[in-house]
Length: 184
Image (cartoon, rainbow, N blue to C red; front, top):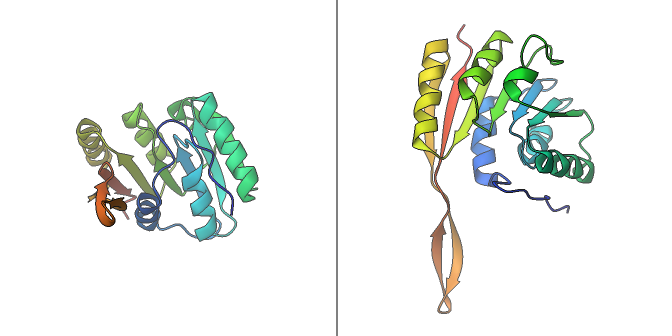
C-alpha cells in the first residue's frame, strides 16, 4: 500500500476524514473541491467513496501542491485538477471551476470569502475542519449569515501507545467539523 507524502499541518487524520466525508454525503459523479488540500489525503478518500468524482484540489502552498500531485499519482487518482492559488479567487466568477457539489475546507484563510463563493456555486454540502476556536466561531457566523449552517461536531481522537510494558492513550489535537448544507 502506498504511503502519503506529508507536508506541515497534514495529512488530516483518517478518523477526521471519515467523519468529514460522511457529513458531506458524496455521490457518484459529484464535483468535489478540496480547499487547502495539503497532501490530498481527503481527496484520495473521497475518490474511494464516490465513483467518477471530479476533484479540484486547491492550495496556495507549493509544497502542498507537490505533495498532492505525488500522492494522486501514487494512489491512481486520475480525474483531478491540482490548482495553485487562493481558493476565494479560484472559486470566483473569473475562475476555471464552473460548479461544485461538495466541498471540504481544510485551509481556513479567507473562510468568509470561500464560503460565499461556494454558496454562489450552489454547493450542496460544505465541511470545514478547524482546530482554532476563533476559526470555528467565524465559520459558524459566516454559515449562518449565508443560511447554510447545519451543525458542529467536535472530535477528540486518542491513539494507543506503549508505556512500561502496558498501553496508554495519547490524545491528538481535537478537531471541530463545521457542516453547511444548501437549504431546500
